Amino acid sequence: MGESVGSSRADTLRWLAEEYRELNGTQYDILDEFPTALEFSRLVHIGRPVLIRDSAIPDAEDDRTWTKQSIADKMGDKKISVAVTPNGRADAVTRGPNNRLYFVEPHTQQMGVRPFLDTLSSDHDRPTQDGGEVHYLQSQNGNLFTSRYFQLTGEEDPSEFELLREYIPSEVPWCSDALDKSPDAVNLWIGDHKSVTSIHSDPYENIYTVIRGSKQFTLLPPTEGWCLKERRYPHATYVRSATTSQLELVPSPTGTPLVRWSSVADPTAPGSLPPDAHPIHITVNAGETLYLPAGWWHYVRQRGFTVAVNYWYDMEGRGMSWVWLNFLRGTEEPPLGNEEDETDTAEATSQAVAGAV
Image 1 (cartoon, rainbow, N blue to C red):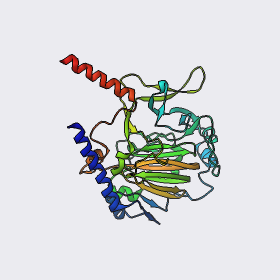
Image 2: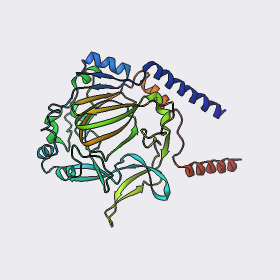
Image 3: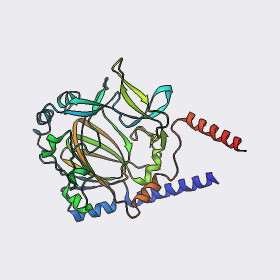
């Protein structure tokens, strides 16, 4: 009975994915200027990515602004939190001790802005096979503005990038007006080609502006989430060794909740996705903005020294949107990411049943 239900559900997901693709294709809209609030509300209703050839950040197209030097001059001696990994893959599935797979978060290191920027490639450096640690500003916690900034409670909203706030708008007016809310978080991203964002989806309407460099997005609609073969992985973190100063992958304590994540490391690699998947590839250059609808899966690479800002607006929880996204992602827990864990779980269940009998 269980196999029949699982097969029926898989068939349903395949039908939905094919029906969606036939109706929408793999194209995306391109706008030469920002939409009005009314126009954007219609785009949110449609729920398709849109590339906008305009920037939410003033002077983003001026080559003299947002250089390493100008950022360092603006920030002075301020210390910031930087993600550090041995391979450029923060928040990603990585093989660790005992050859097991883990979902690994980066080591967070306090650094001066200038030393951090010195670790990054220049604008026109060609990608190379780099050795050594990889540094990326990717804190994703509203490192520029959080929702507290917009609340009228008088609560402070401290930021490591307080000195940059005068150069970066706290919200996108046409988006705030259309959604009738302020951003939940505004994030600054600074890195280079060595850092890769593994494929995932977020419950936010995302306005992503590139200020310098370029970002290459590989996107899949929520209807193709099943193609990404989610699994459940034990959690781990990169920790700097007190004896060697090298980064080590350290598993989290027993009892830490498993992390649900895609097992597809690189959706652009040949054969990594099933034939039913039809990814969309969009390059966002400096001075351009991407609207990424809530629930869309995205994998991101960047070229050269890259600076970007994104605005996360909470998706609407009323109505059917949240229910549909949860259904498309899967109503049952995915398999474990390590086969030996599946075996151990099956044996434990068998023993428990035998004991009960």
